[in-house]
Length: 401
Image (cartoon, rainbow, N blue to C red; front, side, top):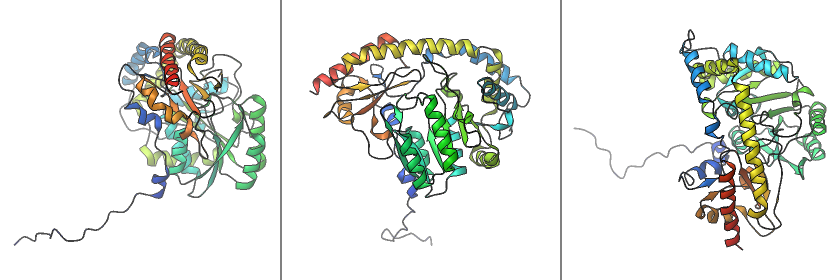
């Protein structure tokens, strides 16, 4: 006779999720995507490259060539495609930072690279320093690793170097995380003197720097600046990506490692996914070798510069009087701050009702947030569409006052 469990029998409770998983913030950008899928919405929320600027012909030819490569559909080495690593290393060297292919580990986007470094460097309870505000996905990654995150504030558009030095002395951090060029979310860039100072503090206080550089090649005005690794080569780990300069769907990034952690990062990569897609790596290598990348990047820069200028030109009429914003030399974002008494998060619902979206700045802070801040991305739309979107935004603020 079968045994039928009694309806009233007690059931064992399932284990709760980890405290680290519960500490990670949700991404407002991802949450907004469902609200901005309607075609009539002009969304300045996501940092999305413009799809019409993708070099589809060149990318298609690169994949065709990749499929003719022996073993491209087979398992491969965790460190990455040798030809691709040589190409990336050559670009670092040409920029004045001598790099060999063995210094590089190819990752599934630079976001995975950040996760691998967190796995390799952070034990639960370790303290790390970040810019305040900070790239949200980095805050999520560090929370999942169990880190104690301490923010280093800015003084205007300049990192507060005295506070960085003081916090490093107080907390003995494992590393300082920075997006030094056209930062997400603010578009800010550390100047030459600040880069030297950050490197000097890291060497003197004995912590590493993770420099995340997905926007480095998107410069529209001003002179290129050296990598932080040029000032403190033994202390700096660099992340890079093709997501902003070829296409994000390719999911190809890399870590420029230092010798003492290379083996640990490679093991972390093996545990994560064995290796990044072999065909995508091979296609990226063929694309770089084809010579099409630089002309395509020139077109992207020219288009984005015009879009940045359109946004900066329309902001005075779009934001309430007393608002402030920066004027980035490159990248994808403008960081704005509303006048006293206007909350960017509370105003978002009215903006969405007017079919326009932005990202409130609160989620980019590890500590006390700035309720008046917001991030606007200028890369996705043509100048005319940007001006239309900011006109809608201006009507939003008018309704709330």
